[in-house]
Image (cartoon, rainbow, N blue to C red):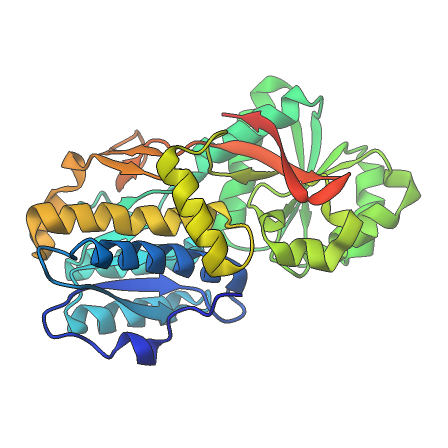
Length: 370
């Protein structure tokens, strides 16, 4: 596994450099594998920018900070990076962490291009300081709900932990499925053991169980319990938030890792740029890159273009979001203001529902595209 840039290495700075602060979960309870992929994409793009002459002859540098999925730690990192003089912020995978970072960046007047977090309400109020590449949760999860209905599922249980992100996901599913004849049965994982989930699935005659819980636990234990229960042989397990995307999922669950559909933000076919970046990321990570690595790369591609065109002045960067037009690894990136979204938003990155193939768990099958 590629080792992400360490803060100590990041701080050996060139006085002429243009610096970007990067927020990434690199230690538990953060989703470390997602953080490593995000970091790999960010770093690869920075290297390519510098190989091509940097920003008007000045090197581009990343100052990486580990958020460890902690909103307070992220807000403190934003303060520190602002003091260090970064031109902009990039990154973050966890929605509740990105939300704290976005609020702080907005308060400080620091441009933040959010790579991977999807919570619709990334900020409470409309802001010009924040833009986002990942599709909003309501967009992706409604596509996932269409997939469920198309696959014949109308009684859907959600095993949910307590967080703004999971509560938002459950609400999106409920609001979208109810008018279309679907029922959402909520199972509170603060109060239930994985084995108790099985009894409730039988009792409620659910045909699908969605994991709105942390990875690896309790997600892995729930999957093992359900797969072992003969009464639930026909039930579909799904994970819209993408837990099965990473190699650790397959390592922990073996054959049970397959046929768990999740959301992935990739096109059916990569462009020549996407294919070239995929090869470079695979070399860097020593494994297949996830969509999160592409999000990291695209983040720096956008920021580099903005810095070349508008310089490193923070206010000018923030004012440039509506004029961005950058060829990313997954399509042309431009920002607009979709209804109900308070930040500048790429509407939309491509969305797929995929799973691991039971015949070959290292291979992904596309089940639905939105």
